[in-house]
Image (tube, rainbow, N blue to C red; front, side, top):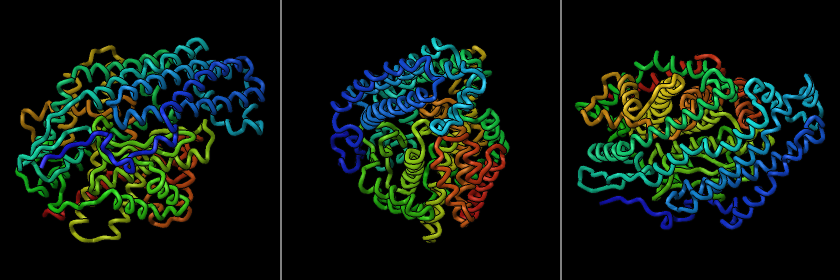
Amino acid sequence: MSQTVPHRSNVDPRLTWDLESIFATPEAWEAERASVQAAIPGLAAFAGHLADSARLLAYLREVEDLGARAYRVMVYASLQESSDGTVPEAAARVSQAQALLAGFGATTAFAEPELLALPEGTLEALAETPELSAYAYYFQQVRERAPHTRSVEIEALFGRLSAVFAGPYTAYSALMNVDLKFSPATGSDDATSDVTNGSIGALLGSSDRALRASAFASYADGFLAFKNTFASLLVSNVRQVALQAKERGYESTKDFVLRPQSLTPAALENVLSVFERNVGVWHRYWRARKAALGVDTLRPHDVFAPLGREKVEVSYDEAVEMVLSGMAPLGEEYVAPMRRGLLEERWVDVYPNVGKSSGAFSSGGPGTHPFILLNHSNDLPGMSVLAHELGHSMHTYFTQRSQPVTYAQYGMTVAETASNFNQAMVRAHLLAQRDEAAFVLAMLDEAFANFHRYFFVMPTLARLELRLHEAVERGEGVGAEQLNAWTLELFKEGYGGEVEFEPEDEARVGITWAQFPHLFAPFYVHQYASGIAAATALSRRVLSGQEGARDAYLSFLKAGGSLPQLDALRNAGVDLSTPAPIEEAFKGVEGLVEKLEGLVR
């Protein structure tokens, strides 16, 4: 029986997100966009008056208000495009929203140079006044950016260029989610299944090896057909980041991206060095996986195959209940709003449809509830993805209710801590509740799927990304063939000879880089590994009933961007300034491998 992916118009609205909670109609969106656009030029009237505490406070509050409104305009447009990129109006709205934010950035560009030009000690004195004390950390960040802040004219130019700088990713997203087409995959029974960005995960996780192989080939070949275009877009994005880094006086793109997030290149080096020292753990896993699957050779399309012969079916409704139960140790303060969002407020867009973005994400902003995009599969990995994205959503939920808009955005490392924390909590809960062999093996599979993505694939891509950025900074030309060769080399190193390649597999593994939009957010992917390491440590504290652990974790969620990321994590109970948490997480992976080895002996 063939499996087809429906068009958006055929999806049950109850399983889609409620964008009407942001704007009731596209006309209401347009009216708000026009209103915000008309209001933005008024911010220029504050220029030259920020030394006055009352005017500075009024400016900051106006920026927060208009910024939040502009962000809601973008959230609505981007979510509409993500749910169905085949609608031409959706892409046009995203472009309009990008232009709005660019205008906002250009108009407010005077502020930081003006604040930095104030006499020594003035900014610090302003931060001590009662009405401005909430902005003390923001002022500290402004001061730290001083060596890299340019003139008002240059800052305004950077602001106007933000929409241009977004161009490579915008084009990548349109190519990947709308224009890219894949051949149907054929299973051992000759039935065909549509291959899309939304369905590929379930197809690669099929117990039908022929279907996995066909889907793997179809998906990779679709990207290979446009490899030069994908390479041009990615390299163009890296070049614009390198340009900004140079113009702002940073030593490298690593510094430019990480230091404003209160991170350092050492954080990246910790992840890569620990991964390289422990890659043998993954080699053991591939050997055990081969034995568990009972195959003579383990091929690239087998690395996602289910370990058990019995598939554990989990409906979306069951997944919701599993997550709600698993997060109970955090109490009703956490669980009640999550339950309401899942069951009443339509936070989640559940199943694949034609034109829908790949993978999963959580979004939202000031004045909106969280929104989650899924391409849900009715199994334990699908449940785990829901738990992960709800971790992001609840982080956003608590931040927005605890912090001013200035601190509503938090860094990537803390973001990935909150998401992976939920997966660890739910996994532990389910394993404590059920001990039947098929379920335990399926949960082991879910754990490996999570660690495989975040502790194998992401560090591998981080190693690739570092090579790419350094090559571009040296002025070297990089194209599709080089990216494919690097990617293939790094994955083969990670597979350690335990995954065998036919000639056609090499190009298909080599194109993996093109399948990850994450690379358009520079030096993001390594933070998944940092996040899962921190989440592992923090979930153990809560699950063990350690005194104060629950309250410390909720305080961490509420902190948002109000303090440096490593400080927020240290307050919650984990220190990522050293490699120790990442080493401990690898020991956890090794323990899982030992369990699998014991099962297949």
